[in-house]
Length: 354
Image 1 (tube, one colour):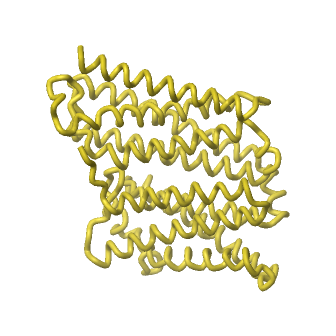
Image 2: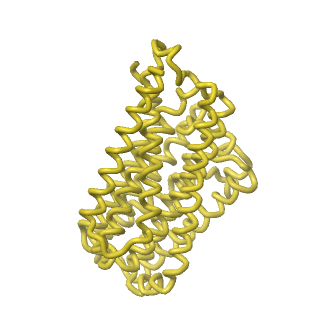
């Protein structure tokens, strides 16, 4: 069966890829050039989010949430304006200025005075703090999540952190907050690992009757959104630690392997929840409906879920290791992924034939 992916979902996946590619610049370009390149990539992705929300509202369309949540309830709420101006306009202005500023810093840095650079950094910090407020609004006041808004908030926080990394004195200051960054990363890891475990248990429970109901799918999507938030905290913590100790962590096999595993978790998790999850309620996990047109989606769903879980657990357990080469850890991770894929395929074949 050929899956038709909505254009907004494709855009979301493209923006996530842009951010991941942008982070790669920090490994291959010297600081602060690599940090500036990441900020440009994150700013372009944020601009894409703001443009999508703006165009959707201008044309009176529904904002498609890749994970199935009610994004429209968030972007049309009373909290979707600041000083009477819709947040997408603020986003368009902020991300445009950030992209323009850091492209200029990359190619013609001499036109920036220290005072102007400090102003840009302060601007990004204020935007990062405002993003935290918007996450609080979703979690506590609205009790609804918009995956587009979460992406924008994480991009804003990433820009904030890497802007701080551009100033050497601030990098030294960030190094004094190692414990806080470790706690932030640990909280995100606990949230993400707990969420992915809970999602697995919920999914297993839903298979007792071999189908996933709309209510069960909604519960799975809600739990998985907690995983995304946890992932955000982990990535922000990792970024902060990397900025404070770039040379040490770039040479750390554990850190490099964890970043690869997090990238796998992002890609597999996004594919699962954005591409495949909307079809879960149409799939039977028993042999009776094997001829159903949606049955071909069963194995990819199981694979993406299992790979996401393995990546999260790999990041968790490697946190207790030190002094191991990246090559060895990545080979272990690859072996775990291959074993996971083989196990899922064998289980699926057994499930259908039993």
